[in-house]
Length: 396
Image (tube, rainbow, N blue to C red; front, side, top):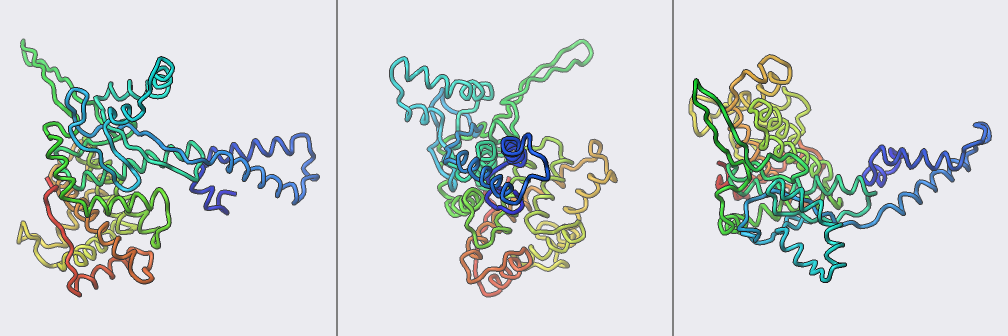
């Protein structure tokens, strides 16, 4: 039933839909002999499931708790902002907008918001992302809301330097504690300390606002990707989904503490973005992408090291993922710090450039929904003289 209906495929989790079908089946067929069930009964079953879906699909606005940056004694130090359908604001703005009065209003707020606020306090989290989801039953809608916020957070991570933004996350996802305490003993002495992990530590709200205001094009572009994920309607849905999938892998890779695992996730982001399908194809497709965006050939030297060709550089990015996943290199023993830095910078740049290019490609006449056609179009666009803004302001 789900396979025949894009509506169910998007709007219901498999287990939830299965339970609805089983419940409707038991209601209609319990006590009946199998040979008494006719085609008309199956049509009635489908109608019952459709009615269940209709009753459970209502617009819902989700409040998703996020850890973005420290604040000033419970007050926001940065302005609210939006990335596509996701509106980010400080929790105090949300509660003030409620303007609940009297004991009854405060009691209702405690029932509704109390558990959320307690969870946020435990993580020193003070921001929320709000997004409305329609066309889905509740469990699926909640999942899409969370993932939409994750993708929107990548918009920030493509703008704000990674030393501030790598740990930005919803607190129900890939988040770290706000700080860790460490103790070790050396001989007769005991040493202790504390290390802050809270994202944006040392970043002022004014600096954050300035970074976001200077990068309105990429923020608007990523917002379009999130909009396509939440609402659909794109002329190139496969490319849109590939970008969002890659953004999620990138988001996970930035937050990963172990360099070897981070390399696997970041290189997966690149493979997913480019539709590589395999390691061998990944090298070829990545070389094609660098040529399409930058006009470099595989035998050209890289800018930072003339003795290393583009092809060698690409092999150095793609190869480690396979080695880690297949056990050729030790996940825990290999030093992958330098490879991680390269993978972060490369995936960051490709996500930025490909999102901006998708805006133009989707608006072109009859775009073909494939990675190969997309790269060919970008290459032709570059050769025709179209210039795309690309800076390394947020690359560190």
